[in-house]
Image (tube, rainbow, N blue to C red; front, side):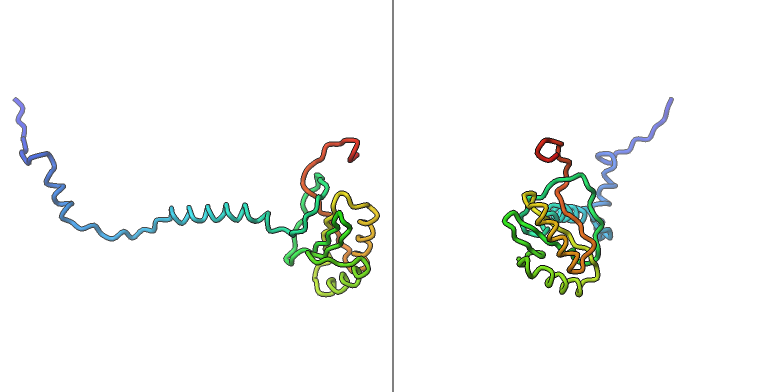
Length: 160
């Protein structure tokens, strides 16, 4: 015969539950980082979407090339823009063609870098672009970068 012990405590383990209910829970000493990570991810997405919208605000229809982007400097890049209407802008300020060399000479005296970016509408003639690039060189800027849109246009009769 097998002898066994039978407990009659009214529900199997009820004594333990009463002990846990009577005890107060200690304050939690851990930081919940899940909300913090959620907020950081939302902010990251917002800045990733907003960053491309912070470029110079002069609308220019630039040509597309397969060239890689140039490395950036510590100071804000100087941008000269030629619009389809024939306007010349330094950053967002319109400059007359006759005053361009004088303005560029004054700006190059204040800047550490001799780098300048030229943005030109695709309808601007090569003669106008070459004239502005000559003025940039005369104004003290010898490191000239041409800004284009990213893309590799298909070779057609229009664009060679």
